[in-house]
Structure formats: structure tokens, C-alpha cells
Image 1 (cartoon, helix red, strand yellow):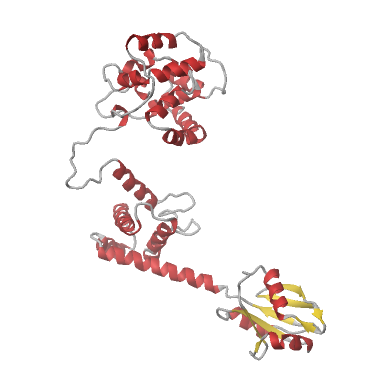
Image 2 (image 1 turned 45 degrees about the vertical axis):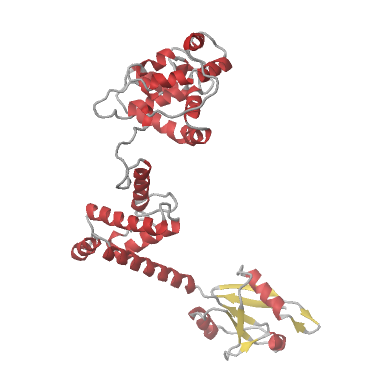
Amino acid sequence: MLVQVKYCEEKKYVKLNEVEGHFNFGQFSEKVIERFCLPPDVQLTFKDATGTEVDAEIFSDLLGQGNVVLTVFSNDEFSDCSRSSASDLSFSSSGSTIIMDEVPRKKLRIEDLRSMSAKQLIEDVLRSKSGGEEVLQEYQTTETLTDATRRQMVNILVAHMIDNHGHLPTKAVREDYAKGIVMLFPSLRDPYSNKGYEHFYDAASNTGYISWRLKTVQRKIRRGYAMSPNTSTDISPRGPNFQRTVNVERQLDGSACQEAISLLNHTTDKSLIFQKMRETFHYRQKLVNDPGRSDNILSTFPRFLDTKGLVDQDFTLLFDEETSARLLQKWDVFFKPNVIKEAKQLTSTPELRRLVQSAESPIGRDFDEATTYDQDMASLLLLLHLLPPSPGTQVSKNQCV
């Protein structure tokens, strides 16, 4: 027997087999769930035109009578869709017509509750925190917020978020705060975005005012800005000049080190170059950390310029493979193309043109007069051209190594 089933505005047929004059109620429910792709654990309630519930005991007898209209509800609430469908449906054949409905508005009601809860959260935080009342008063007066007040509001909310959810709050938490902001301050909603609050937090790209503020706080903490009152302010400098403790086996010194440096300037054996560069690592670090000799790095170790992988080897020895991999994973795909792109916007000089040409040269191409450096070294030197020097200092390209 073919039974016509209607789920709101969608109609389908469900085939039900009659076994010894009996229609199986459980089998029918399973087929309805399967046809309309409903959750397998959903509970359905059947009622006839009079509103009387139809259960498994009378289901088969009722279908056998013909001209029967059944309305199907979920186990939650009866929606307006099902009630209107039941009153408007007319039966035109001897088959049974079953009207099925769910609760399409339930999800909307849940979203509305979340939005109102988020709005109340933002208002409560601003009223309880220093500077929050000023934000509320400015919006009440002008129906908008200045950039300075908006930054103040984001700082207050991110501080509250960190206090309650830690320095790495989930995307759902960040999204709730962003949603609450535009609910409390409607004029701050972005009419051109899908949800209206992506400029405060966009989960897809992890960007927005809230995300940027979180990153700023995390960066300051890593740099030691968030210090306790009892912490000494005499902090050892970090960066290239920081004296890190590095344990590398079999390091050369004295005459053996000088012999290795001399060999590096003449050998073409790549494996030997990597070995001797590794064995002279400690000596090279002393040069890097000596302001009077750091400019001589590339003249002392010119193989940095024509042997790919040496910078990576030194970086790995200085830190570790995991830290080194973080840069390498993104360098070729993201960083290097953007460095080259930005470098092309700089004032052209012969040196800059050589670096750009070397950085764009095909992998495996032999060096010639035009391509002085390997790709990675050239792109690193281009990056140095893009970075501004520290105040009061002059930076040479040798200091990038």
C-alpha cells in the first residue's frame, strides 16, 4: 500500500506492506523517518482529524477503513504548520493521507534565547566593570560608539572573557560575546555580512576586534609585560642577541675551527658543507652575538648565500625541530610569496633586483650572475629590506643570519 506523507510543504510516498491483513505501526514509523531524513531517535505521535491519538493497537484498523487523515507530530511541541495543514488538507482518493510536521521554529527559539542571553551578558559586564558605564552612556546619547570607545569596550569584554574562560576561549564563547555586542548596540551591526557581527569575531577566519585583542594580550604575556609586582624589571634581552644555552655535539675550536672555515670556502661537497657548518655552529653564534664582528657573518660563512638549507640547520640547532617546522610549514606557501610581492613595491636598486630574481628563480636552477643566492636566502634578505631598523641602530643584511 502506498501512503502519501506530507511533511510541511514536502510530499512523498511511503510504501507499507500489508502482512496477513495487518499494517505494522513500527515499520511505518521507521519508513517515514527514513524518507524524510529525520533523526533516528525522534519520537512521533499520530493523531486523527478529531485530535485523538492513534497508537500501534488501532493503527492497522484505522488505515483499513480508508479516507483517513492522520497528523504526525514530534514529541516536542505542535507547530502552527501542522495545525494549518490538518485543516486545509482534502482527501481525493481511497488511499490514506498522512500529514507530518516537526517543530521548525524550535531552533529559532533556541537561537533567540542565546542571543538574548549574550546581550544580557554584555550589558552586565559593562555595568560591573570600570569604564563600562561610559560606553553605555555614549551609545545612549549618540546611538553609536567612537573608535576609542569601541576599543575600550572590546578591552573590557576581552578582559572579562579571559578571567572566566582563560587565555584561549573557545570559538563559541568568542562568538557569543560578538553576538551580544551587536544585540546590545544595534547600530554596530554590519549590514553587509551574513551574521552582522563578523567584524567583532569571525569564526571562519579567526579575525575581528575580539580575536585581535586576545592575540595582543597573549603576545604581551609572552614578552613578559604582564609581570607581578614582585618580579624584577631587570630582564635579559631576547631576540637575536639573547645568549641561549645550546648543546650541539662535536664543536670545533681554535685551529681546527679555522681549518673547517677555510675548507667551507673551497669545497663543493654538499654533505661536507652541512657537516662543517654544524661543527662551527658555536663559533658562529659567538660572531652573531658580538656587535663588533656580527657584520662579518656572510663574509666568514659565504655558503649561507649559495647553499639551501643552512639557515634552516642553524635555526633548528638554535631552537628545535618543532619550532623550526612552524616557520617552514608556512614560509614557501604564504610568507615567501608575500615577501616577494611587497619587495617589488620598494624603490628598485641593483641589489634588490638581484634578490627578487634569485627568490623567484626555479628550484634546482644553477647559480649565475643574475641569481646570486638560493631562493630561501634571497627571500630572507628581502624580508630584511622590508623590516624597519630598531630606533637608533643601523641594520646590515648580515645581521639577519
